[in-house]
Image (cartoon, rainbow, N blue to C red; front, top):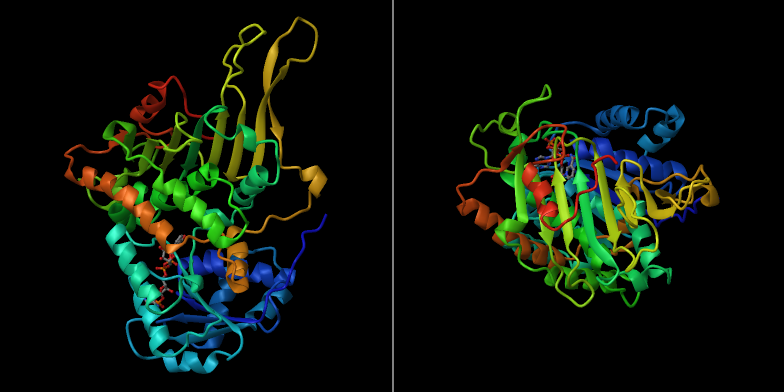
Length: 481
Ligand code: NAP
């Protein structure tokens, strides 16, 4: 089976921050893949924008070297054809120079995508620069990278600034987790099959675990992590979005506002988290690596590189089924997954099984996207009725064709922006509601004299995080299981 490619309309994509890390590693390679596959029209154009003094030829040379590292197997001729779509304009987002040059480069009738791959302090100045220069047409969209604010007040201010220049229907707040194939498959699984939805509630689901584990440390972004911490950097956006998609009610239509309305209702149904239900940790020196405090350059750092929490969604569907969230750096493996752990059968007619874990639906986002259903079956062979647990692979590679290529999340999301589809992007009120829930937690930590619990690099996080589940008679899935 070959995946279908539906070409998008002609567009001009202005990439602010074109000389930066994200542009080199993700955005330009994603656009290249879409170009190569035939989704990007030949008249599509990518106009890099940054302060660095360079001409279009120099920008193309820079992009070529990024693509050579990001897509080493790409044919030289494909890269050469793609580079022809690239242009460059020198703009200082904080100044007046460059906007007129940009205006001359934009076509009147094409869709305009302004992609802000720059630090968050530049989001508002660039939006207002675009407005002042008269560059915002009805067919314009603005894409804003994370972080979207660092608390409710800053997110509200940013929403207000963007809203003064763009309509909400033109604003795309990106969370690349939502562009992952399996995240969308979670919606297909739930809402396109009658099988799971009757079980999708507290009567049948014992608990849900959402894990986003990273094996790397702060990797050169120490200053940012010291300021943000894992709760703001990961939970407020990625983990809460995964929680919303898992817990939301079926929307009446698969349409951006219908989906986002349901996600918003989940955030609004979250109980406040008392201090005993949240654990923060910080990796210490060891395993040949520095501590978090060393890496961020602050020996007294009180920022968390790990968070685990027990969350309750207070509504009819989920009362009594906790959601356990955890995320951290320098853990055993890089792994992101949602595990839906079902309740045991009400009565067992079989001999007790050692180490029984029960039915679970595992939605794995990385490293290898896929869905498995853990089933209990009879252990094959003679010797009586012994049971065993096996994963049922629901990736369906055989049925769909092993050669099917999963596009990177950024590829899908950028094409959705061009098409004007906001389903996989966060709405302003969603982001604000998420901060409203997070703010009391960060405020309580700021007032507390307690430091985050230390944990070893290469492990599963602090002991207290294990206790969070042990107390409830449950256990975390192994990271890397
Ligand atoms: P970066 O490597 O520091 O790049 C920043 C870019 O902004 C550079 O191209 C820089 O170019 C440009 N810039 C800085 N000041 C400017 C100004 N006054 N006017 C115009 N351009 C200016 O940052 P990044 O890692 O690519 O991250 C970009 C955004 O994506 C950030 O919001 C970040 O939080 C977010 N993000 C990044 C990652 C990642 O993996 N890197 C992941 C998720 C989200 P000049 O110096 O030439 O102006």
